[in-house]
Every structure is written in C-alpha cells, then in structure tokens.
Amino acid sequence: MTSPVALLSFLLLSLPLLYSAAPLTAYEALEQYDFPAGLLPLGVTGYTLNEDTGEFEAYLSETCSYSVEGYDLKYKSTISGKISKDKITDLKGHPRRR
Image 1 (tube, rainbow, N blue to C red):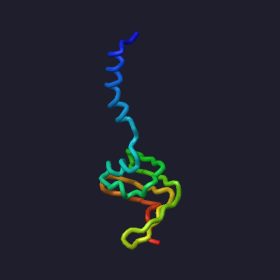
Image 2: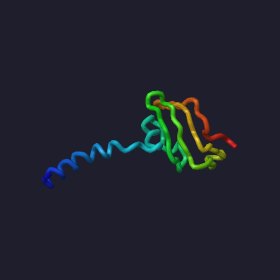
Image 3: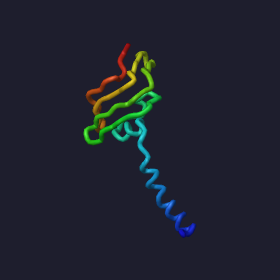
Image 4: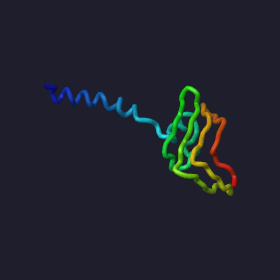
C-alpha cells in the first residue's frame, strides 16, 4: 500500500507536467510567433498547426464581420496560411474590406 505522503509527493511533482501538456489556444499560439492575440477575432473554436512547416488553419463557428477605424472587415469561417516568427504568408479567409 502506498503511503499518503508518497502519493501526495507524486501528485505535486506531476502537476507541472500536467500543466505544461495543456495545448495552447489559437491566441497563445499567435503570441508564440510574435503576433498579438487580437489578430484573430474572438470566438475561435479550434485550430491546427504543423510546427514543422508553419501551416495552420483556425476555425470560427461562422463568418465574422466587424468595423475598425472606418474599415468594414469580414473573416471567413476558416482562416489558413503559413506562419513563422513575425510573418504570415499564403493567408486565406482573412479580413477583407467590404
């Protein structure tokens, strides 16, 4: 039988491993590439990211429209492209002026 002290010690030592294993949100992933989280609209339902190639897709539940500084912008429900530090290329589904 395992002692309560040994069990408690095991759990306390395992907490950092459990915490670090949590996947990043799409907003946190953007920040890892030196982009502001606000680059994506609120409501991202999920994303995929190939860390080797930088290819990504971010998913919204529906298209998203909003205005900022006199521009009417619209995101499609899937945004995709290729990301690296301070650079996004091949962007599709991004905001466009209506």
